[in-house]
Image (cartoon, rainbow, N blue to C red; front, side, top):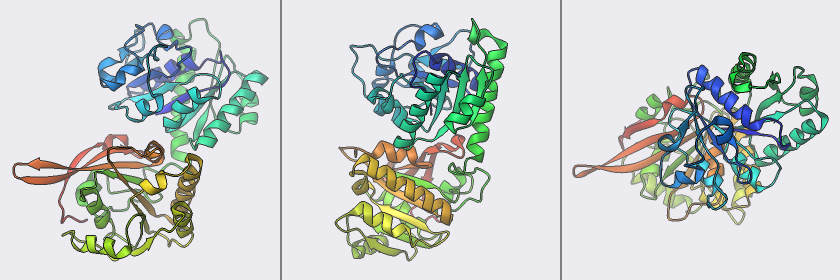
Length: 414
């Protein structure tokens, strides 16, 4: 999910949202453009589609069923912003969005308040839009600062109504993906199309070259479950953070136990003594390793961060469950996730956060799932008289096409 953002009104965010969506579609990736502006939603006007259904309708329907195709932009669909009378939690709606195989682009509002931070926090990355005027670039710098504070990577900037990228690139300290020439009919202008095509090509290059995202060509590390490793194309790349989501019925926990067979593991329990974790592993029925066990004290977040310093190269770091850490202040938890990511990249290790699903969703669960490189949901499905464990790949940043569901044998290992 890409947020298209810029603090300066009139810099061309909405046109850029549709322009980038059209470029993705021309590159054979269908695109869904969503208006997240509560105050002045106008994506539907620029796209020439009906005012409703809106983003608020996602509570009752899938995006693919209610989004409207855009005439003149094959492969692009639009979901208008909420009406003033409609109540919708924008961040939650976007975090739970099922977009299928579409590239999602979120047209963000101007300014720097909660109306911007809600959609920004749900995105995987941000594209900043600015003109080449001094004030617009200054406002774009503010947008970059907001993204940094939220822990959302900035993929680059698009400079609209301009031919020169130098001024923006020098001030923003982020790559300029394209400069878009001024046009009376930008969505029908071939020169404008070429600029947005260039931006999408650069976006893919930035994702590959950025040291933070996972390199899809890197060596994969086994999860300990053969069916999951096949689905992921060999396993998780070194440096990954994975969220394993499931109800407290033991099926998701079993996946954590299988992981300990693949390599050395530091297993951090946040709610049970180490002896009870070992008892659960012994009673699991499937293969397990011999992980080093630790438990948290009075300050779980500080304890978890401290353990990272001594983590050996190529090891697993398991947090079971992550809910205790997710209960902390958002900024403090984000700082922990940044430290965790940096440490995984330094050690070529894998971090796995066990995220319990229950009646109440932890306040920072959306943060976990957004930062995670992979999200695996584990559940039990009855097959006749037997329960069958299944793992669904909800998200896999290196290869979105890996999303799908596989059966998991309790005794299975790679």
